Image 1 (spheres, rainbow, N blue to C red):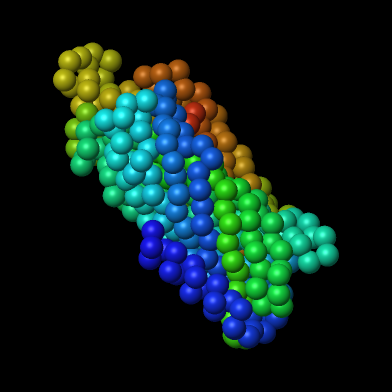
Image 2 (cartoon, rainbow, N blue to C red):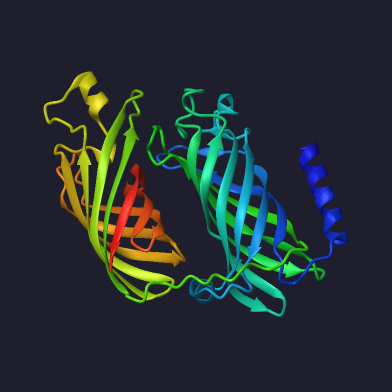
Amino acid sequence: MNKFLSVIIGFALFCFSAKAQDTGNSIEISGTSGIKIFSPEKNYLSGPLFGGELAYHFNMADNKSDYIRILNIKSIDAVFSYRNMSRVILNHDQATKGLIGDTYAVLGRLEIGLFKINRTELLFTPGFGFLYATETHATNNQNVIVGSHINLATQAGLKIFTPITQTTAIQAGVEIFHYSNGAAKLPNNGINAFAYTLGLVQKINQAGPVNDSEKQPENKHFFELGVNVGSRGSIYNDRNFYKAGFYMGYNYKFSPALSIKLGTDAVYYNTVFSKTTKGPTFLNDFQSYATSYDRWRVGIAVGPDLWLGKLALMTGYGYYLHYNSYYPTKTYWTAGFKYFITPYLALQAKGYVHNTEADYVGYGLLFRIH
C-alpha cells in the first residue's frame, strides 16, 4: 500500500509540472474499490475489494478512420490492472478468507464518448485482456470459483472526464469487471465485481497519432469460413475434452464499424457421453451443459460484429438444429474476436456458451470470400 501511495504522489507531482500538446497521448493512474462482488451458482462472496490501474491512452483525435469517427472513439488504451481480493470470504465462512487472492491483468480498452457538456464528457470504457490469479482451486481446494492461474478478463465502465488544468484531468465512474478461463480448466464460475474508480489523467509531450490510411473493403457482402480447436476441462479430474469448431456464414457490412451475420456453427467432440455410463466413468465423461451423446452438434446463429479496422469483435445467438445433449439444451451464444492479417485471412478466438456456462474457447483461422 505504501508503494502504491508513493506512485500516486509522484504521479500527482508530475501532473502539475508537465507540459503537453493538446493532441498528445496521456497517462492515467486510478484507484478502484469494490461495491459488490459475486459469482453464479449459489456461491455467495463478500468482503472488501480494492486495487488500481495504470493506463496509457493513445489519443484518436486526429485519426480519420471511419470506425473511429462513427463510434466516437476518444482513445485506445493499454491497461495494467491490479486487484486485491485477499479478504473476500465464501458463503459467510471466515475460514475461507484468502482463497481468492490477488489478480494482475493486461487489457486493451476503448474510451468512447457518449455526450459532452462544455469540457466534461461521459465515456463508455469497454476492455478485454488476460489476467493472472494468484489463488486457484489447484492451490486451495476451498476455491470453487477459479480453476486456473491464467484467465480471460473483461470490463466495462461509465466514467466522467473533467479537465482541471490544460494538461490534467480527473476521471471518475463505475465499472463491472469479470474474469474466468473459458472452461479450459474447471471450476470456472469466475468472479464478477461492481466497483467505483477515481483517477488522474495527464497529457504527455508527444505528437498525436498517425492517421490510419487503411480502407475497408468496398464490397459489403462476403462469406466467412472458420475453423478452431480448443478444450474444456473436467471438474472431477485433470482431464481435457478436446473439440473442433467449424463456421460457415454470410456477413453484410452496412457501415465501416458494424455488420450483421447469419451462419452455421458445427462442433466436433473428441469425447462423447454414453447413455449407459454410470459410476466413475460418468464423472470422467460428464461435461455439464456441453455433454453430448453424438460426435457433432450443429446450430444456426445470428449476431452483429463490431469492426475496429482489422480487428472485429464477434457475438452471436443461436438455435440448435441437432444437439443430442444430456440436458434439454436448445440455444447457445458465441463471443470472440477476429484479426485480419490479410484482406482474406484472419486469426480468431471464439467462445461457446450455454446459458451462463462457458463450453470452451477455440483458437484458429477464418477465411473471408468477397
